[in-house]
Length: 268
Ligand SMILES: [Zn+2]
Figure 1 (tube, rainbow, N blue to C red):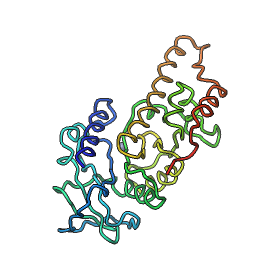
Figure 2: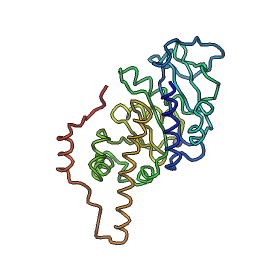
Figure 3: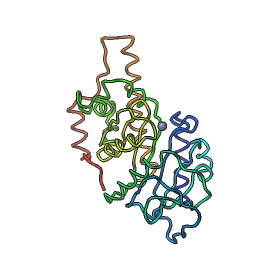
Figure 4: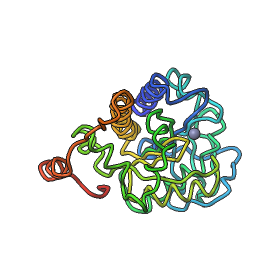
């Protein structure tokens, strides 16, 4: 369990350093059920979740606290978040560690955690953060309209450097703008996360899943790096309008997919 908390603290520090976690921005959960061999009995008050999550009933999660800052979590994860246990019905929780009220986004994180357990996934972590360059691209209609130009954003990011395709082979899904914390946003996220490890919330941030919190962070980092390269390349275009960033060719990307035998869907 200590290694999980260390990892959470490390990722929270990276998010702050990268400027992705201003004030109390961003939140995360990690399923830590496997670390509670001697399951502590649930005592104390039950806090309703407002929905039922049957596949994660009786399970344990580290959850970032509401109004807590990533930069403070980096120093002390258990004062800026807490470990909770869901009730046998999966519709309320109790605190296992010192109570720190969970993020207001808890139901959307648990909706995804519930889906991951339902499908037998080994993924344990969910992460929401505000990566600057990806959010910047989400202000451009051309990258948002999947129906007009299918996977335009994914293909643009993949084409920046071969490693983007290798390390984020599922690409990035797009969730049209919804009010933060809304049920609509949670439901739209769940639909997209079935096909992608990282989804872009239009004009807001990203929501990512991973085998652990570092894995979720790495995927966002890889995709955001590609977005940054693209935007940096465009600064040259501003001075030389006849020169667009080329990107790797379709053939070069197909070669990477073939040579590295990249998956086209999430492994269990
Ligand atoms: Zn946010």
